[in-house]
Image 1: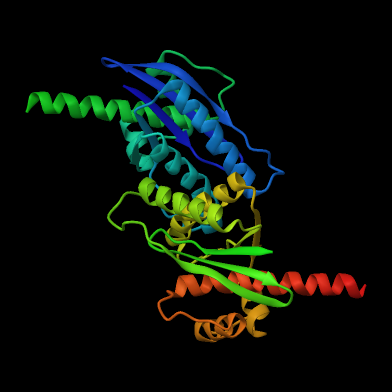
Image 2: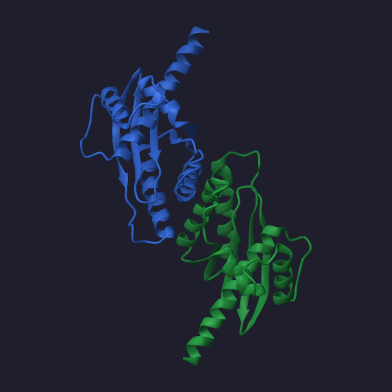
Length: 166
Length: 166
């Protein structure tokens, strides 16, 4: 199974692709899409949509993983702006026939580190440990996107093991 | 000039197309896009994107008008959800080479009725008056979308008149 994690943002959208091989997660690709911060909203969204389409065609993921949309009650404008990026990413999943999976941030952290309120550093260290690889040039968004992909792989593996045991 | 107003929503996205002929606004089309409320987010967004693409191809608008995104501080989750629909609409404008225009709701109401805090009914009556047409089957979203298109036409006409006078 190949999994694409995406951390949406209008300034920087992180992505991470992993390949599940048995109980292992192998790094395929990770990085950022960086729309021109001086460009208008439509052009930025088109950049995210176009580059994700290229990644989807190149890596052929079966699943696209996002953090579940939740209420940033203190930052509603930021939440709405992020919603724009999230919208074109969900659209891309539909257009490319990729299954969308969504998890709450606490669930992602718990799957990776055992703790729902792990720090960013703890998550990054677990990403490194799971993949046996780490590139210091990865942004925090790319690392978060990899964390999403790995957490999904981990939960799928557990689900499959439970199904076999039942 | 042909103008497409859009009132985004995941359950119902209203649209209204008007043609500017001198100082007049002529009704071209109005209605709703209604994604299946039982469908998932990606499919609903794809429905909005696909149907707007058909409308853009059919009516060839030069401008797409949206209400400016603003902070619904009391409803941040609703704002973020609406952001998803808004995102794919902005993307569509970019893909079709349609200029995006955004106005604050108060500016739209003032352009139509002279009052920034006009009621929905007052706006609907002014839409009817400007177009010399009204279809009782229009939803409030379709009427709001027409209001956006007419307000843009009105402001453009004023800008042109001011430019000629200067």
